[in-house]
Length: 77
Image (cartoon, rainbow, N blue to C red; front, side, top):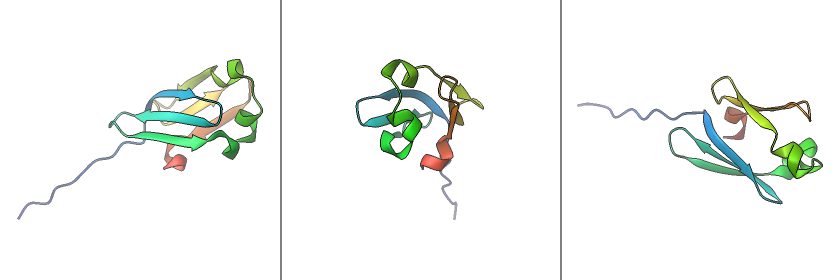
């Protein structure tokens, strides 16, 4: 008997925002949405500040230099 092992990623490949949520696409195809109210610095940021992000650790996290904010994708799962 063989066992199917599914590997799930915790690396993001895309991120965007609307007025109330942050959306992420993971490299295994899953999509997440989380309320930006969970992160006061993102909630209070301007759209320009929110959109000034970069991936860290090959997509393991997101960094906002303007806001001095880091979020690990694994923590959102």
